[in-house]
Length: 109
Image 1 (cartoon, rainbow, N blue to C red):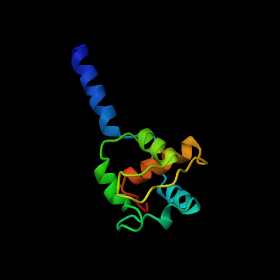
Image 2: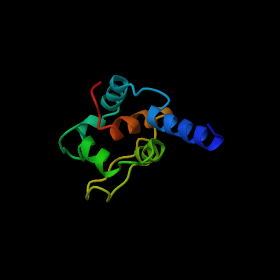
Image 3: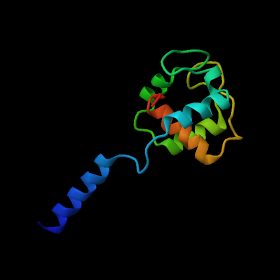
């Protein structure tokens, strides 16, 4: 096997392996509830804000770090006239956990 073939195989294995850590859905959901995210969002239906499944679909392929920044900054106009308040008090790690969970469609497990 030549070097190019080995590197291609290694890259494919890394890509298929997925994230380096498993998503702790229970911790993410608890964090969302603790920070009042669930007051405006639900996993599968629109409340004040969009359903998490719709966010996951719209931002498919987005890196969790990018969505985490948006969660911390808040925003307006992406989903209609109702602004999302900033969650500036979240740690970067908590914001990233929430972003990973939302991008996964807000699974229960």
